[in-house]
Length: 172
Image (cartoon, rainbow, N blue to C red; front, side, top):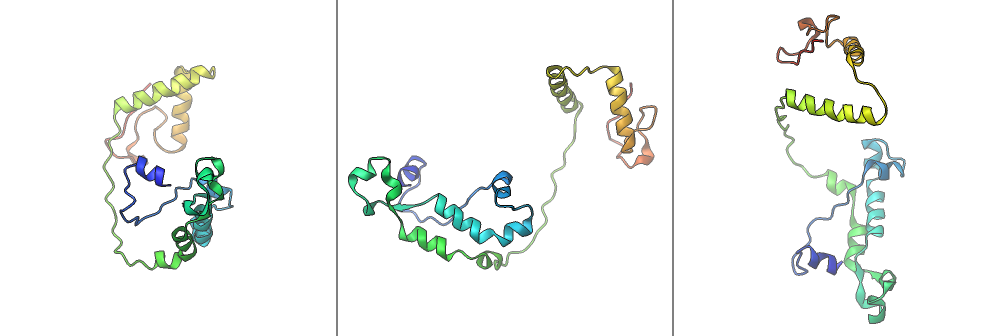
């Protein structure tokens, strides 16, 4: 761990004030965690599991020969790491009383250039899978869009469908 710290510019003399573990959905699913409620109910166990998988070891508990070989895993867990692992309680985290403020959504404008780029990417994928993209293909796309109330049957934007006036218009 000390090697990792020094390679990444972290001084051993500075306090470590934060430990984070990144867990992707696939990893969480391996523990049958499918919802936020599942995650919160298993948070302490997940933290403990992560602390066991990624360990800070006490190199003074093994020989110099073991340190320089692949036997470093035999070292005892550092007492501080054990303390952190044993002390974590979800209630301590949930008890933080911070104000809840809503972030303003960044305004995003979808441009014709972005639409063209997406269609080029889709055309490449279609070509790789022998899918023909022609006028008939776009007619089918237009009919599918009609089912979700985006366009009328002539391929014109329909104002009574609830889209903003600056929405893209498709005409074939």
